[in-house]
Image 1 (spheres, one colour):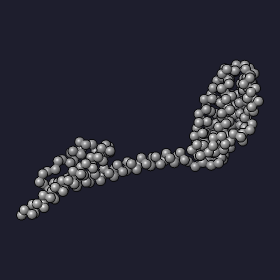
Image 2 (cartoon, rainbow, N blue to C red):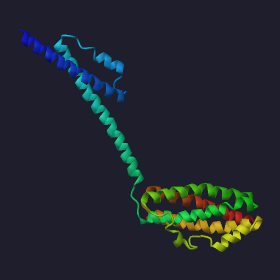
Image 3 (cartoon, rainbow, N blue to C red):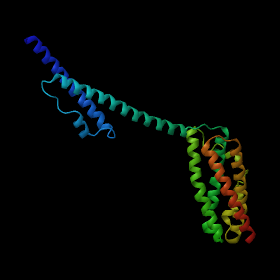
Length: 246
């Protein structure tokens, strides 16, 4: 009779240890998944083991193990969804692009940089309030776009200045002498030179944007090209009106 009692005692002890281990595991999982179970709810599910009642211990152990598996699956599901979101973000950052996208960014960056340089001359030289306002809007729009395009090129492993040599006065870019003449001008003369130069500059930018729209692939670059085309066409009409009023 003593042997069966001793064996039963050993079995009860083993079950108790397993129950405690399961409780700790489930508690740890539940603490990471507060949306599923609170600690008070776990206390309701798992009351303290009833000493000497093997059957109740077994039911408690089963409940603890079952809930541990449920919580583990829930947390695993949450973790998997987080990974999926990250993967989607990485996918967006590395969206497909082609050579036209690279060329667009490489050539539009120096083009924008010159426009910003021209615009920064206006506050101290322009006579017309409208010209000063236009210059301010050009700088505010194009400076952030430069940063955006440089970010694309960095992500693609491409040089930001790769298209500068190809510009060489094309697409409405001002020559060094023309920039010097603009820097030396003031008043109404500056207004006229600025508007004429920026009008040609914008026309070149619209042509570059249209090429990107036709040949590009990268979604953000296509969106920027559309925005450049729309905004600069509107500014071209504005500058033509200002020139007529000088």
